[in-house]
Structures are given as structure tokens and as C-alpha cells.
Image 1: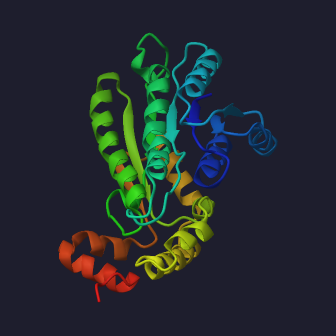
Image 2 (image 1 turned 135 degrees about the vertical axis):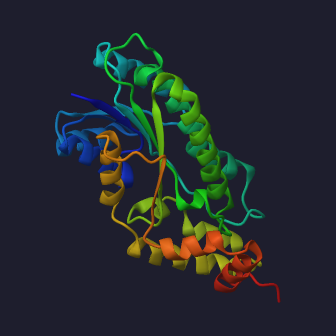
Length: 283
């Protein structure tokens, strides 16, 4: 049975990827931060789901989990790693604290680095192991290609993840380990519930960014409702691990027309369109 590590499986995309892989004959090692979440997933998914209790920002815990996985693999290679765990820090650059920026990068970038490095030997960097080299899927975002106001920290982390993924893919050709990016648009998941909207609005109260922030929060709610279901992302991940999908990057975006237009328009024109939509024009 092939084994795959998926980070951030408590909710959303990660949970669905774990469920889809288990349903299709894979053993999944899924990271959760709370033991109770792991117990719930075992009850839901069965014995082919093995919880790993760690936070992706805690390198010591990540390394301990990797050692545990290697023991269970018994010399075989890991078939895959899905770097899914992530958060969204929202707010105007002027109003965000250095600590908030640091948290964004600790999770979305350093977390990917920690997990990738910890599991590389099991994926095939150690060529003495049996089986085929594994694959790495990094869950990025359309925000890794199009920058939006009030999303600067998140954009920065996802743009960084895109560059990291491309460099990593070219490095790991040496071992036959492929790296693929999946970049979702809006998804029907609770990622936007993980930040305190009331606190954001309170901090922006009576500032120049109050109304644009209110507009942005309304837009994210609508986008989540109209976004793809997590199953769409999970099914693409399954195809990649089954060898049925060979591209280096997949954009899965229910708003692909709008985002493609924004990416192709002259930047100044796109700026004006976004500013008008969000109330960011200078009076």
C-alpha cells in the first residue's frame, strides 16, 4: 500500500484530500495540531488514516513525526507529500503588525520548508530505499499569481511558495521526485473563518481602509459560497498521485474568467478596476 503525508487535515482541503486518498487505497499520514482531531479522523476514515500530531511551524515536532513515518514505512519510499497547511492574514500593510506578518510566513512558507526537508529522504532523496520516488504537491492559490489589496501578507507568502516550488522541482529531478503546484481559487472551506473579522474592522475603524475592508470581507463571503467544493482539489491531487496528471501547475478557479482578465490586462488598468470595485480610488 502506498503512503502519503498530508499536512493540515483537520478541516477543508486537507481533510478532503485525506478522505479521497484513503477511499482510493492509499494510507494517509495526516497532520493535526490536536489529538482529538486525529481521533475523529480515525473514526471517520478508518485504519488507513494515521494521525501525526504537530504544528508545521515546530521543526522539532515535524522531525519527530517524520522519524515515526519512516519507522512505519519499513524501508519503503513515501509515495507523496501534500503541503496543504496554511492560513490567511488579512489587512492593510499599514495596519498589520510585524508579528502578524511573521505568523503568515512561519505557517505558509517556513512550514512548507520544514515538512519538505523532513520528508525528503523518505520521498526518495535517500536512494537506498525501495520503490519509486514520491511526489510533492504544494497547495498554493490564485493569490500566488495575482496580488490583491488587503491581502499583501497572504500574497507574499503564496508568491514565495510558487518560486520555492519551481526551484525545488528542478533540484529534485536529481532524485526523480516531482513537484506539482495546485492553485485553487475560492473554495468552500473555513479558511476565512480563521481570522477575527471583528478585530480587523475595529482596528480599521475611522481609518482610510475601513470601507475597503468592509467591502473585501463581503466579497470573500460571496466568493466562498460560489467557489469550488474541496472535492475538486482532492480529485486533482488523486490524479497526480495516480500518474494521470503531468502538468507542473494546476489552477482550479471558479472565477477563472475574472482572474485571467486581471492577469492579462495592463497593470495600471487592472489597478483602476480593482480600486473602483473596492473603494480605493483617491478622492
